[in-house]
Amino acid sequence: MKLKANDLILVRHEEPDPAVALILDDPEILETLSEARSYPAPMPASICFRIEKEGEVIGQVCLKRIRWINHKAEISLFISRSMQGRGYGRQAIESIIEFGFKRLNLYRLEAEVIDGNKASLKLLKRSGFIEEGRLRKAKFVKGEYKDLLRFGLLKDEYTE
Image (cartoon, rainbow, N blue to C red; front, side):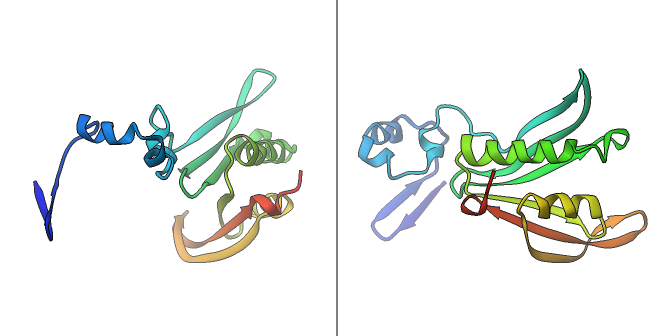
C-alpha cells in the first residue's frame, strides 16, 4: 500500500525495515524518538507480581496499561477474601507505588474503584491518591450498574 503526500510517497512496510534501520543508527535521530524505538525488547504493557505470605499466594498487584511515553500506569490489586483486612493490601500498594515511581520512572499512577468499595477507597486515599472523576453506571455488578471512581497520584505528590 502506498500513500501520496504532495511530492512524497509513503510506502507501507513491516518492522524491521533495513532501510529505515540505517536512519535509526544515527544517535541524534534516535534520541528524539520515544524510548519504544531504543528499548531492545518489546516494552511490556503490564508488570504483575503475585503476593505471597509464608509461601501461600494471597493476591496480585500489577501495573497495567503502562504507557511508557507518557510515564503512566494503572494499579490493579486484589487480595483473597480470607486474607483481607490485615494490611497486606496496603503493603502491596505502597510497594508497587515505590516500584513504579522509583524503578520505572513513571510520573503518574491511576486506579479505578467501584463506588461503595469502602476498603479500596480508604486504601487509595490513605496512599495519597486523589479522586479525579466518576464514570456513571460503568460497571455491571450483581445485577446492577455501579459507578466507577477514577483516582490519580503524581510522582511529585508521592511521599514515602
